[in-house]
Image (cartoon, rainbow, N blue to C red):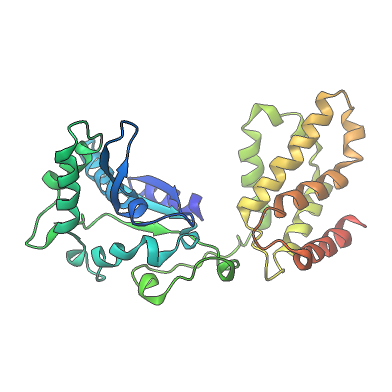
Length: 296
């Protein structure tokens, strides 16, 4: 999802500003707010939204179309705690309704004026001098965008995303790729660009590719599991790292090929065990798939 969002931004001429949300996010992280710095003084640090808007302005001056903010795993943040003023800024669907309230910029200016060593002053000046001003605030550039990504499969285990928040976005559901052969080709080509896997990748022949495809297709039938390209890529990296380790210790490649199913099982299990939904029930479902395809 994040790769697609980044690709779209770049193809349209916008620089992607990618951040990952987390449960500790607050107003300071998204909008901005006062914070202590190393010298013991207080400064006003802009959050990811205002910083991205400033990056948008700066990118335009460099000949780019601007910058877009991409918030990965957006539902890992507590929306009520972190995005309160996001609702105010993006109050409606039309760009003419997107306004940074004056009180936010005034608050920022107040703290900046009290700290002569304010490292964020240049960002403040970009906002104040480059954005169109109204009686109530500063207009967000109409071609600026915020993209949020999330997994539907683990939505019950993370913070709730209310309708008031989601209606400020266009919702696009991204399903698994429809062509597993093309997907694997793209992922393996990506891995193959790394010189460290030149020898290890040779163990993946047509038979092993078919095994990987069968496992992938079956895992994607498990409702509680999101085995997308990112997880598949991670499993392939883990698999090839273990193959490479055996080759570097002197094991002949033909001997390694005899162990590829065991190594593949370990790679998939270790990659999936870090998902927040991993429990005994899900482990058993994954084990059943691996037993059926690889043998118990």
